[in-house]
Image (cartoon, rainbow, N blue to C red; front, side, top):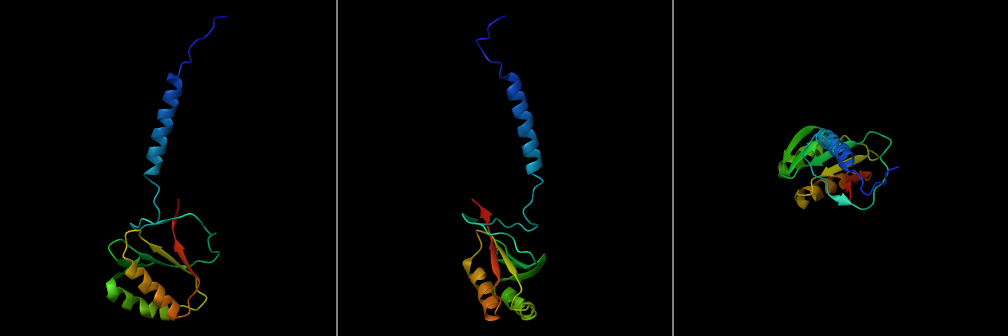
Length: 129
């Protein structure tokens, strides 16, 4: 039997390139939500809620969304959320998706209005680090 002094890595490289192509192709189809929001990171994570929560999103440019519907930008958008908040029961779960580049002022405005109505089941969505 002939002794092998070298390992042929070319088949291994071929397999790795095919796997890389598959990963890169499928990664382009994965979308986190439908809105262009880049979530900030957090080291801890909780389990998802068992009921369907109301989703409020704040984009990097300050646009506020109620679900998939655009509410507006700035103080006018916060005022537009007021009637919607009035219709929520105090135990309603709310999920906030805030872009990492969004102004903190918009986030605080939404949280203040939720607290004023007694809505305390608020989750802030982040991506895991």
